[in-house]
Image (cartoon, rainbow, N blue to C red; front, side, top):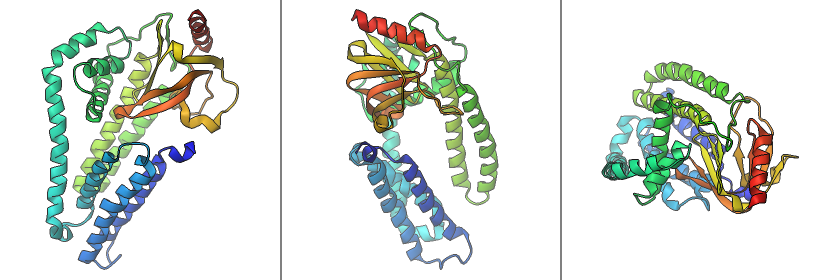
Length: 346
């Protein structure tokens, strides 16, 4: 049952590529099909009905709010405008205004929240400086949430702020060292792995942009921007691995793995801590994987079990309920002994 409730991002990406790719090809390959207004209607049907339906069944259903179908439909409309030649889209002029209106609403909402952030900047900065967490992400998120009502759009902007900070403004900051701080990246290939991904994306971005630009300049620039954003994400991941290790306080255990996922659990909610023994594939959907991606998949060193499901935070405000955490710190014995002592004293 847990496997059925898990979002199937791989299938969604595969179906999207098939649907959008096949619709793009029929207009670019001569004599592939007879070009008629009905062909454009079929493409629109795929983009604004089939894609949102697939997103609902594979990603949204019973997992996220139904309102997330709206940006999927807007994205489908935008994709159709890029795929279908203009001579066929002229019969659907009203759809252009729908896309423009939808984007205007989203941009307007972002601008509104940005204005609120600017007006509350002094209070947010004061709150931010008063905290002693090693994680910029946690400090900024808590400071903002105390001043502005939490929303998904605010969570997205908070995630973007963390990406910008780690990518551009964290290079002079040195990792903190203390008995309650436990690094997890030094004995792994995670830094080299992300550098390899950045290198591959740089080469792919330049070559693919030049190749695609002659076919569809707008789409080529969109994909180039997305690739640049992905590169910044990988850079932010590297910096977050270095600067945001696992931290244990008198009351809580903070586990942050890059900028993609975080978990804060109270020590009183930890049921047991043990060394990793064997695979637990049946419960993978409820496990917080506290190990970064690297060249070879390693087994965790420590398993931390909770007394009840706790909420892990993912990028852009998404969350996940977990019952245990798998971690592999650089010095597993130190974390195991420190956490065991804390649990015994409590």
